[in-house]
Amino acid sequence: MKATGIVRRIDDLGRVVIPKEIRRTMRIREGDPLEIYTDNNGEVIFKKYSPIGELHTFASSYAETLNKSCGLKVVICDRDSVIACAGVSKKEYLESKISAEADELIETRTQYIRKEGDPEKFITTRSGEKISVLSPIILSGDIIGAVASVTSDEGEPEKIEEKMIQTAASFLSRQLEE
Image (cartoon, one colour):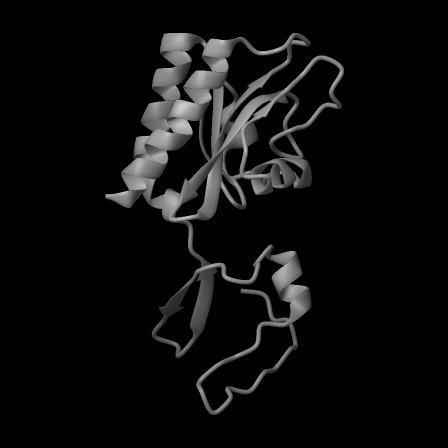
């Protein structure tokens, strides 16, 4: 654990303010859920909560199925990092932070479909393949992540790719509702 040197007091309602610099660095937005952990040393630890992270095994299986049945290179992420992928290097993608451009696409709450001539957008800062189609995963009105297909091709995605990615995002959202 890294010390920041920042000290905050608890107010009369039991609240602690997380400094803006830390929220920006850790990509914590207003309304983001945080999990609270304690340990035997008396430490209290706040961790960003990712509801889609609970579906890691299921999301991995779904990505593998899309890859095997349709030949798609699939990446599934929460609001911060990649949690599952198939058809791409797991070493390169898994647990990598999503790029600012991917975050912007997710924030639009609509499906992104790359058009010929569009600037290249990457799902992570380390990935070499462009986003072809991206659909946000929305749960109870909150954006919790996205499903994307990536490619190194220049052409536009086919309609089936658009529908498969959209279906995956909807299906994962429904799984989380249960």
